[in-house]
Length: 265
Image (cartoon, rainbow, N blue to C red; front, top):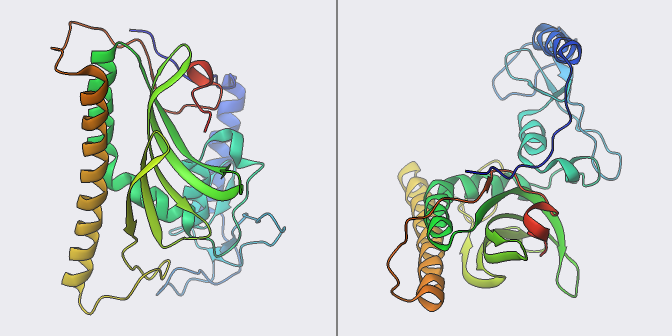
């Protein structure tokens, strides 16, 4: 089985040791600011290192227990997970505005459906004898109006590019709605259930109602994507019996140049 992976910089043992030492130092380094974690009264916080595209710094600080460390710096949990969850090629060029919860909401939405969609796409890739490419959450300007959009995509690709592309998308102009797309065609639009971290939607009256809204969101989005994959298979493969095949390649973190230009929108 051939693995298709994005090239990564080779790290020497010395660089790796230095990175580990820096990480360990930041884990326990004490600052002099109050921690921004709700309910934490520790005055040992270090400032979040994140700055947005307008060069505005994140105003939070975090104690050793609640800080997030990545890329040799301290971040708040939201911005740290954002940096770790987006593609390398976008990290230095696309910085999310402070208060923009769209990438974090999209990351959560993807986690709700990722296992099932990945399994369905992997099975189809095996049957179709093509490569499965999984793109991380990333930013793009889409359509003739160049809409600011965040998306996560699963792609089945041959040497010419994507054969089937499934994506979960949020446009910054409509942050309260998640779209599921099959080959750029929207098959479902689902309202984001309310959460105090983003404030989209109507607050539920009870915790039980909140859990019900989250479950309904997951089931609606997942059902539409799985149905779209099945319909594409029916229209393109017919009732052909699965063959004995081997997966040509899997790229868990694709890039716009991977698999013969498979990242093209």
